[in-house]
Amino acid sequence: MALFSSGGKAVDTKVASGGTESVFSGGKAISATISSGGFDIVSSGGVDSATTVQSGAIQQIFSRGTAKGAIVFGGPLQAQQVFAGGTALNTTLHADRRLDGFASVTSIVGVVEDVVEAGGTSVLTKVLSGGIQDIFLGTAINTTVSSGGHQDVTGGFTSITMVSSGGEQEVFSGGTARTTTIGGGGVQVIESSGIASATTLGSSAVSEVRSHGTAIATTIGAGGTQSVQSGGTTSAATISSGGTLIVDSGGLADPTTILGHGIEIIHSGGVDSGALIKGGTQFDSGLANSGTLFAGSQVVQSGGTANAWIVSGGTEIVGSGGEAVGVLIKHGGKQIVSGGSTFFVAVSSGGEQDVGPGGTAETLTIAGIGKVFGGGIVSGGGIFGGASAISGGTEIVGSGGTTSLFAVVPAARRSSIPPALPSARS
Image (cartoon, rainbow, N blue to C red; front, side, top):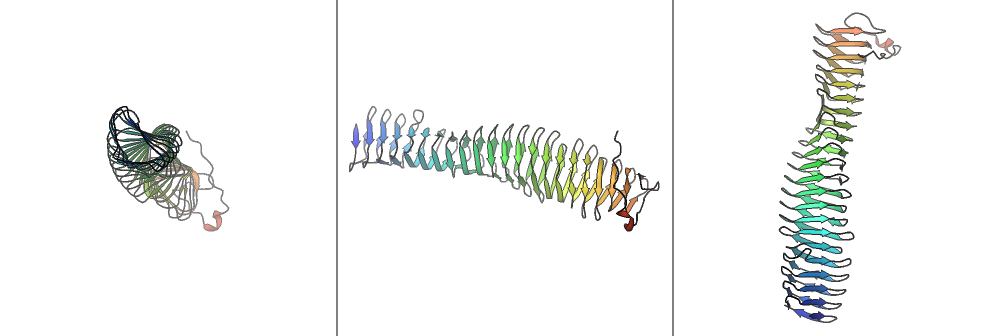
Protein backbone atom coordinates (compact mmCIF):
# COMPACT_ATOMS: atom_id res chain seq x y z
CA MET A 1 0.00 0.00 0.00
CA ALA A 2 1.28 3.43 -0.95
CA LEU A 3 0.17 6.39 1.19
CA PHE A 4 0.73 10.03 0.19
CA SER A 5 -0.25 12.79 2.60
CA SER A 6 0.60 16.48 3.08
CA GLY A 7 3.71 17.39 1.12
CA GLY A 8 4.05 13.85 -0.24
CA LYS A 9 4.46 13.34 -3.95
CA ALA A 10 4.77 10.19 -6.06
CA VAL A 11 5.49 9.88 -9.76
CA ASP A 12 4.99 6.80 -11.98
CA THR A 13 3.76 4.57 -9.16
CA LYS A 14 2.80 1.01 -10.16
CA VAL A 15 0.02 -0.61 -8.12
CA ALA A 16 -0.34 -4.36 -8.61
CA SER A 17 -3.31 -6.63 -7.93
CA GLY A 18 -4.42 -6.37 -4.31
CA GLY A 19 -2.48 -3.13 -3.84
CA THR A 20 -3.85 0.33 -3.00
CA GLU A 21 -2.64 3.85 -3.69
CA SER A 22 -4.15 6.34 -1.21
CA VAL A 23 -3.71 10.07 -1.76
CA PHE A 24 -4.62 12.14 1.32
CA SER A 25 -4.82 15.87 2.02
CA GLY A 26 -1.85 17.71 0.59
CA GLY A 27 -0.57 14.61 -1.19
CA LYS A 28 -0.03 14.28 -4.95
CA ALA A 29 0.20 11.27 -7.21
CA ILE A 30 1.28 11.73 -10.81
CA SER A 31 1.14 9.22 -13.69
CA ALA A 32 0.31 6.20 -11.55
CA THR A 33 -0.71 2.91 -13.16
CA ILE A 34 -3.30 0.83 -11.32
CA SER A 35 -3.30 -2.78 -12.49
CA SER A 36 -6.19 -5.26 -12.38
CA GLY A 37 -7.28 -5.88 -8.82
CA GLY A 38 -5.67 -2.66 -7.58
CA PHE A 39 -7.27 0.43 -6.03
CA ASP A 40 -6.62 4.14 -6.38
CA ILE A 41 -8.19 6.14 -3.51
CA VAL A 42 -8.18 9.93 -3.60
CA SER A 43 -9.32 11.36 -0.25
CA SER A 44 -10.10 14.88 0.97
CA GLY A 45 -7.47 17.37 -0.16
CA GLY A 46 -5.59 14.82 -2.28
CA VAL A 47 -4.78 15.35 -5.95
CA ASP A 48 -4.30 12.53 -8.43
CA SER A 49 -3.04 13.41 -11.92
CA ALA A 50 -2.78 11.39 -15.15
CA THR A 51 -3.55 8.04 -13.56
CA THR A 52 -4.15 5.02 -15.79
CA VAL A 53 -6.75 2.66 -14.35
CA GLN A 54 -6.36 -0.64 -16.13
CA SER A 55 -9.02 -3.28 -16.72
CA GLY A 56 -10.13 -4.77 -13.43
CA ALA A 57 -8.88 -1.85 -11.30
CA ILE A 58 -10.98 0.77 -9.46
CA GLN A 59 -10.46 4.47 -8.80
CA GLN A 60 -12.44 6.08 -5.96
CA ILE A 61 -12.58 9.84 -5.47
CA PHE A 62 -14.02 10.98 -2.14
CA SER A 63 -15.27 14.36 -0.92
CA ARG A 64 -12.79 17.17 -1.69
CA GLY A 65 -10.51 14.78 -3.51
CA THR A 66 -9.53 15.57 -7.12
CA ALA A 67 -8.53 13.36 -10.03
CA LYS A 68 -7.17 15.03 -13.18
CA GLY A 69 -6.61 13.44 -16.55
CA ALA A 70 -7.45 9.88 -15.56
CA ILE A 71 -7.74 7.23 -18.27
CA VAL A 72 -10.09 4.50 -17.08
CA PHE A 73 -10.14 1.27 -19.07
CA GLY A 74 -12.70 -1.53 -19.17
CA GLY A 75 -13.19 -3.48 -16.00
CA PRO A 76 -15.79 -4.05 -13.36
CA LEU A 77 -18.98 -2.08 -13.15
CA GLN A 78 -18.25 1.61 -12.40
CA ALA A 79 -14.45 1.42 -12.49
CA GLN A 80 -14.33 5.13 -11.59
CA GLN A 81 -16.46 6.15 -8.61
CA VAL A 82 -16.78 9.86 -7.86
CA PHE A 83 -18.54 10.29 -4.53
CA ALA A 84 -20.40 13.37 -3.30
CA GLY A 85 -17.99 16.30 -3.07
CA GLY A 86 -15.35 14.59 -5.20
CA THR A 87 -14.09 16.01 -8.51
CA ALA A 88 -12.98 14.35 -11.73
CA LEU A 89 -11.43 16.54 -14.44
CA ASN A 90 -10.41 15.72 -18.02
CA THR A 91 -11.36 12.06 -17.75
CA THR A 92 -11.37 9.51 -20.57
CA LEU A 93 -13.74 6.66 -19.82
CA HIS A 94 -13.32 3.28 -21.46
CA ALA A 95 -15.20 1.79 -18.51
CA ASP A 96 -18.37 2.57 -16.57
CA ARG A 97 -18.48 5.34 -13.99
CA ARG A 98 -20.72 6.35 -11.10
CA LEU A 99 -20.83 10.10 -10.58
CA ASP A 100 -22.25 11.51 -7.34
CA GLY A 101 -19.84 14.43 -7.33
CA PHE A 102 -18.61 16.79 -10.04
CA ALA A 103 -17.02 15.98 -13.40
CA SER A 104 -15.82 18.35 -16.11
CA VAL A 105 -14.51 17.50 -19.58
CA THR A 106 -15.25 13.80 -19.92
CA SER A 107 -14.94 11.63 -23.02
CA ILE A 108 -17.04 8.45 -23.04
CA VAL A 109 -15.46 5.99 -25.46
CA GLY A 110 -16.84 2.62 -26.55
CA VAL A 111 -19.61 0.57 -24.91
CA VAL A 112 -19.50 2.48 -21.65
CA GLU A 113 -22.13 3.93 -19.29
CA ASP A 114 -21.58 7.07 -17.24
CA VAL A 115 -24.29 7.26 -14.56
CA VAL A 116 -24.89 10.72 -13.08
CA GLU A 117 -26.58 10.08 -9.75
CA ALA A 118 -28.62 12.43 -7.52
CA GLY A 119 -26.41 15.36 -6.59
CA GLY A 120 -23.95 14.61 -9.36
CA THR A 121 -23.08 17.15 -12.04
CA SER A 122 -21.40 16.51 -15.37
CA VAL A 123 -20.17 19.41 -17.50
CA LEU A 124 -18.68 19.32 -21.02
CA THR A 125 -19.07 15.62 -21.70
CA LYS A 126 -18.56 13.99 -25.08
CA VAL A 127 -20.48 10.77 -25.66
CA LEU A 128 -18.82 8.91 -28.52
CA SER A 129 -20.02 5.88 -30.50
CA GLY A 130 -21.33 3.13 -28.22
CA GLY A 131 -21.25 5.33 -25.13
CA ILE A 132 -24.18 6.10 -22.83
CA GLN A 133 -24.62 9.02 -20.48
CA ASP A 134 -27.38 8.18 -18.01
CA ILE A 135 -28.66 11.24 -16.14
CA PHE A 136 -30.20 9.44 -13.17
CA LEU A 137 -31.48 12.22 -10.89
CA GLY A 138 -28.32 14.24 -11.56
CA THR A 139 -27.46 17.14 -13.90
CA ALA A 140 -25.62 17.29 -17.21
CA ILE A 141 -24.64 20.55 -18.88
CA ASN A 142 -23.04 21.06 -22.30
CA THR A 143 -23.07 17.44 -23.45
CA THR A 144 -22.24 16.45 -27.04
CA VAL A 145 -23.68 13.12 -28.21
CA SER A 146 -21.91 11.88 -31.32
CA SER A 147 -22.94 9.27 -33.88
CA GLY A 148 -23.73 6.00 -32.10
CA GLY A 149 -23.82 7.73 -28.72
CA HIS A 150 -26.81 7.87 -26.39
CA GLN A 151 -28.01 10.17 -23.63
CA ASP A 152 -30.69 8.82 -21.27
CA VAL A 153 -32.41 11.37 -19.04
CA THR A 154 -33.97 9.18 -16.34
CA GLY A 155 -35.23 11.50 -13.66
CA GLY A 156 -32.46 14.07 -13.98
CA PHE A 157 -31.92 17.34 -15.82
CA THR A 158 -29.90 18.24 -18.91
CA SER A 159 -29.16 21.62 -20.42
CA ILE A 160 -27.45 22.66 -23.66
CA THR A 161 -27.12 19.23 -25.24
CA MET A 162 -25.97 18.76 -28.83
CA VAL A 163 -27.01 15.50 -30.50
CA SER A 164 -25.11 14.94 -33.74
CA SER A 165 -26.03 12.77 -36.71
CA GLY A 166 -26.59 9.21 -35.55
CA GLY A 167 -26.80 10.18 -31.89
CA GLU A 168 -29.88 9.86 -29.68
CA GLN A 169 -31.38 11.53 -26.62
CA GLU A 170 -34.14 9.72 -24.73
CA VAL A 171 -36.07 11.46 -21.97
CA PHE A 172 -37.82 9.18 -19.49
CA SER A 173 -40.32 9.68 -16.68
CA GLY A 174 -39.24 12.49 -14.35
CA GLY A 175 -36.47 13.60 -16.70
CA THR A 176 -36.17 17.07 -18.21
CA ALA A 177 -34.07 18.02 -21.22
CA ARG A 178 -33.74 21.74 -21.84
CA THR A 179 -32.14 23.57 -24.78
CA THR A 180 -31.25 20.54 -26.86
CA THR A 181 -30.10 20.82 -30.48
CA ILE A 182 -30.73 17.74 -32.60
CA GLY A 183 -28.44 17.87 -35.61
CA GLY A 184 -28.98 16.27 -39.00
CA GLY A 185 -29.84 12.60 -38.55
CA GLY A 186 -30.05 12.85 -34.75
CA VAL A 187 -33.02 11.52 -32.77
CA GLN A 188 -34.88 12.67 -29.66
CA VAL A 189 -37.45 10.41 -27.98
CA ILE A 190 -39.67 11.77 -25.20
CA GLU A 191 -41.18 8.93 -23.22
CA SER A 192 -44.09 8.90 -20.76
CA SER A 193 -43.83 11.77 -18.21
CA GLY A 194 -40.61 13.01 -19.78
CA ILE A 195 -40.26 16.69 -20.70
CA ALA A 196 -38.14 18.32 -23.39
CA SER A 197 -38.17 22.10 -23.70
CA ALA A 198 -36.58 24.53 -26.16
CA THR A 199 -35.42 21.79 -28.53
CA THR A 200 -34.17 22.77 -31.99
CA LEU A 201 -34.43 20.22 -34.81
CA GLY A 202 -32.05 20.48 -37.75
CA SER A 203 -32.15 18.89 -41.18
CA SER A 204 -33.21 15.20 -41.06
CA ALA A 205 -33.50 15.41 -37.26
CA VAL A 206 -36.42 13.61 -35.62
CA SER A 207 -38.25 14.19 -32.34
CA GLU A 208 -40.80 11.59 -31.21
CA VAL A 209 -43.25 12.56 -28.46
CA ARG A 210 -44.69 9.33 -27.12
CA SER A 211 -47.71 8.66 -24.90
CA HIS A 212 -47.80 11.12 -21.96
CA GLY A 213 -44.55 12.71 -23.06
CA THR A 214 -44.35 16.50 -23.39
CA ALA A 215 -42.40 18.77 -25.73
CA ILE A 216 -42.40 22.51 -25.03
CA ALA A 217 -41.29 25.29 -27.39
CA THR A 218 -39.74 23.06 -30.05
CA THR A 219 -38.29 24.79 -33.11
CA ILE A 220 -38.57 22.53 -36.15
CA GLY A 221 -36.03 23.63 -38.74
CA ALA A 222 -35.78 22.86 -42.44
CA GLY A 223 -35.86 19.12 -42.99
CA GLY A 224 -36.63 18.40 -39.32
CA THR A 225 -39.68 16.42 -38.16
CA GLN A 226 -41.51 16.14 -34.86
CA SER A 227 -44.18 13.47 -34.49
CA VAL A 228 -46.68 13.51 -31.64
CA GLN A 229 -48.03 10.05 -30.94
CA SER A 230 -51.23 9.06 -29.13
CA GLY A 231 -51.28 10.62 -25.67
CA GLY A 232 -48.30 12.89 -26.39
CA THR A 233 -48.32 16.69 -26.33
CA THR A 234 -46.28 19.36 -28.05
CA SER A 235 -46.84 22.88 -26.79
CA ALA A 236 -45.82 26.17 -28.41
CA ALA A 237 -43.98 24.51 -31.29
CA THR A 238 -42.67 26.66 -34.15
CA ILE A 239 -42.43 25.10 -37.61
CA SER A 240 -39.86 26.94 -39.70
CA SER A 241 -39.59 26.83 -43.47
CA GLY A 242 -39.14 23.22 -44.58
CA GLY A 243 -39.98 21.75 -41.16
CA THR A 244 -42.80 19.27 -40.48
CA LEU A 245 -45.00 18.56 -37.46
CA ILE A 246 -47.11 15.39 -37.51
CA VAL A 247 -49.92 14.98 -34.98
CA ASP A 248 -51.08 11.37 -34.88
CA SER A 249 -54.42 10.09 -33.62
CA GLY A 250 -54.69 10.92 -29.91
CA GLY A 251 -51.85 13.44 -30.08
CA LEU A 252 -52.17 17.11 -29.14
CA ALA A 253 -50.44 20.25 -30.43
CA ASP A 254 -51.27 23.31 -28.31
CA PRO A 255 -50.65 25.71 -29.98
CA THR A 256 -48.45 25.68 -33.09
CA THR A 257 -46.92 28.50 -35.13
CA ILE A 258 -46.43 27.59 -38.80
CA LEU A 259 -44.05 29.90 -40.65
CA GLY A 260 -43.46 30.24 -44.40
CA HIS A 261 -43.26 26.81 -46.11
CA GLY A 262 -43.58 24.96 -42.81
CA ILE A 263 -46.02 22.02 -42.75
CA GLU A 264 -48.30 20.61 -40.07
CA ILE A 265 -50.17 17.35 -40.67
CA ILE A 266 -53.03 16.51 -38.31
CA HIS A 267 -54.11 12.90 -38.76
CA SER A 268 -57.59 11.62 -37.97
CA GLY A 269 -58.05 11.77 -34.20
CA GLY A 270 -55.25 14.30 -33.74
CA VAL A 271 -55.87 17.79 -32.36
CA ASP A 272 -54.23 21.18 -32.76
CA SER A 273 -55.62 23.97 -30.61
CA GLY A 274 -54.82 27.62 -31.25
CA ALA A 275 -52.54 27.28 -34.28
CA LEU A 276 -51.14 30.40 -35.93
CA ILE A 277 -50.48 29.94 -39.65
CA LYS A 278 -48.07 32.59 -40.89
CA GLY A 279 -47.14 31.45 -44.36
CA GLY A 280 -47.00 27.68 -44.06
CA THR A 281 -49.63 25.00 -44.61
CA GLN A 282 -51.76 22.99 -42.22
CA PHE A 283 -53.29 19.75 -43.52
CA ASP A 284 -56.16 18.83 -41.25
CA SER A 285 -57.76 15.38 -41.17
CA GLY A 286 -58.43 15.63 -37.43
CA LEU A 287 -59.49 18.68 -35.40
CA ALA A 288 -57.97 22.13 -35.80
CA ASN A 289 -59.51 24.28 -33.10
CA SER A 290 -59.53 28.05 -32.48
CA GLY A 291 -56.67 29.08 -34.74
CA THR A 292 -55.81 32.06 -36.90
CA LEU A 293 -54.72 32.02 -40.54
CA PHE A 294 -52.60 35.08 -41.33
CA ALA A 295 -50.89 33.88 -44.51
CA GLY A 296 -50.36 30.59 -46.27
CA SER A 297 -53.10 27.97 -46.27
CA GLN A 298 -55.19 25.56 -44.26
CA VAL A 299 -56.45 22.47 -46.06
CA VAL A 300 -59.32 20.72 -44.30
CA GLN A 301 -59.31 17.20 -45.67
CA SER A 302 -61.77 14.33 -45.49
CA GLY A 303 -62.74 13.68 -41.86
CA GLY A 304 -61.13 16.92 -40.72
CA THR A 305 -62.79 19.81 -38.89
CA ALA A 306 -61.67 23.42 -38.55
CA ASN A 307 -63.57 24.96 -35.65
CA ALA A 308 -63.73 28.62 -34.60
CA TRP A 309 -61.05 29.90 -36.95
CA ILE A 310 -60.23 33.45 -37.99
CA VAL A 311 -59.05 33.80 -41.59
CA SER A 312 -57.42 37.21 -41.81
CA GLY A 313 -55.16 36.38 -44.72
CA GLY A 314 -54.24 33.39 -46.82
CA THR A 315 -56.71 30.71 -47.92
CA GLU A 316 -58.73 28.12 -46.08
CA ILE A 317 -59.64 25.21 -48.37
CA VAL A 318 -62.42 22.90 -47.25
CA GLY A 319 -62.07 19.78 -49.36
CA SER A 320 -64.40 16.85 -49.91
CA GLY A 321 -65.44 15.35 -46.58
CA GLY A 322 -64.00 18.26 -44.64
CA GLU A 323 -65.91 20.67 -42.41
CA ALA A 324 -65.38 24.23 -41.20
CA VAL A 325 -67.54 25.56 -38.37
CA GLY A 326 -67.76 29.05 -36.89
CA VAL A 327 -65.23 30.70 -39.20
CA LEU A 328 -64.71 34.46 -39.47
CA ILE A 329 -63.25 35.52 -42.83
CA LYS A 330 -61.72 38.97 -42.44
CA HIS A 331 -60.36 41.49 -44.93
CA GLY A 332 -57.76 39.76 -47.11
CA GLY A 333 -58.86 36.27 -46.12
CA LYS A 334 -60.44 33.69 -48.41
CA GLN A 335 -62.31 30.44 -47.94
CA ILE A 336 -62.74 27.95 -50.77
CA VAL A 337 -65.39 25.31 -50.16
CA SER A 338 -64.40 22.60 -52.61
CA GLY A 339 -66.60 19.58 -51.96
CA GLY A 340 -66.72 20.13 -48.20
CA SER A 341 -69.16 21.87 -45.88
CA THR A 342 -69.11 25.08 -43.86
CA PHE A 343 -71.46 26.19 -41.10
CA PHE A 344 -71.93 29.51 -39.28
CA VAL A 345 -69.44 31.45 -41.41
CA ALA A 346 -69.18 35.23 -41.32
CA VAL A 347 -67.49 37.01 -44.23
CA SER A 348 -66.38 40.53 -43.30
CA SER A 349 -65.89 43.38 -45.74
CA GLY A 350 -62.85 42.57 -47.84
CA GLY A 351 -63.14 38.83 -47.15
CA GLU A 352 -64.26 36.23 -49.67
CA GLN A 353 -65.95 32.85 -49.69
CA ASP A 354 -66.02 30.73 -52.86
CA VAL A 355 -68.36 27.73 -52.87
CA GLY A 356 -67.35 25.31 -55.60
CA PRO A 357 -68.92 22.18 -57.10
CA GLY A 358 -70.09 19.83 -54.37
CA GLY A 359 -69.47 22.43 -51.69
CA THR A 360 -72.08 23.49 -49.15
CA ALA A 361 -72.23 26.67 -47.09
CA GLU A 362 -74.94 26.98 -44.44
CA THR A 363 -75.91 29.86 -42.19
CA LEU A 364 -73.86 32.67 -43.65
CA THR A 365 -73.41 36.31 -42.87
CA ILE A 366 -71.66 38.01 -45.77
CA ALA A 367 -70.61 41.65 -45.82
CA GLY A 368 -67.81 40.92 -48.29
CA ILE A 369 -67.90 38.73 -51.39
CA GLY A 370 -69.68 35.39 -51.66
CA LYS A 371 -69.33 33.43 -54.89
CA VAL A 372 -71.24 30.26 -55.70
CA PHE A 373 -69.88 28.26 -58.61
CA GLY A 374 -71.58 25.55 -60.65
CA GLY A 375 -72.89 22.85 -58.33
CA GLY A 376 -72.29 24.82 -55.15
CA ILE A 377 -75.05 25.47 -52.60
CA VAL A 378 -75.52 28.32 -50.14
CA SER A 379 -78.47 28.03 -47.76
CA GLY A 380 -80.04 29.32 -44.60
CA GLY A 381 -78.62 32.82 -44.21
CA GLY A 382 -79.04 36.45 -45.07
CA ILE A 383 -76.63 37.46 -47.83
CA PHE A 384 -75.50 41.04 -47.26
CA GLY A 385 -73.96 43.03 -50.09
CA GLY A 386 -71.98 41.89 -53.09
CA ALA A 387 -73.09 38.22 -53.06
CA SER A 388 -73.17 36.54 -56.45
CA ALA A 389 -74.06 33.18 -57.96
CA ILE A 390 -72.33 32.01 -61.11
CA SER A 391 -74.10 29.86 -63.70
CA GLY A 392 -75.38 26.59 -62.31
CA GLY A 393 -75.06 27.57 -58.66
CA THR A 394 -77.90 27.62 -56.16
CA GLU A 395 -78.35 30.17 -53.45
CA ILE A 396 -81.22 29.83 -50.98
CA VAL A 397 -81.63 33.06 -49.08
CA GLY A 398 -83.29 32.95 -45.66
CA SER A 399 -85.06 35.57 -43.59
CA GLY A 400 -84.50 39.08 -44.87
CA GLY A 401 -83.24 37.92 -48.25
CA THR A 402 -85.00 37.23 -51.54
CA THR A 403 -85.61 34.20 -53.69
CA SER A 404 -83.39 35.48 -56.48
CA LEU A 405 -79.91 34.11 -57.13
CA PHE A 406 -78.35 37.01 -55.31
CA ALA A 407 -79.43 39.75 -52.99
CA VAL A 408 -77.58 43.07 -52.77
CA VAL A 409 -78.45 45.08 -49.70
CA PRO A 410 -77.53 48.81 -49.78
CA ALA A 411 -74.86 49.80 -47.31
CA ALA A 412 -77.24 52.15 -45.47
CA ARG A 413 -79.48 49.22 -44.60
CA ARG A 414 -76.84 46.64 -43.57
CA SER A 415 -76.60 47.77 -39.97
CA SER A 416 -80.34 47.22 -39.53
CA ILE A 417 -80.31 43.67 -40.84
CA PRO A 418 -79.89 41.01 -38.15
CA PRO A 419 -77.23 38.34 -38.54
CA ALA A 420 -78.17 35.06 -40.12
CA LEU A 421 -80.05 32.64 -37.89
CA PRO A 422 -78.75 29.09 -37.45
CA SER A 423 -80.39 26.63 -39.77
CA ALA A 424 -81.30 23.11 -38.89
CA ARG A 425 -78.70 20.52 -39.83
CA SER A 426 -79.62 17.01 -40.74
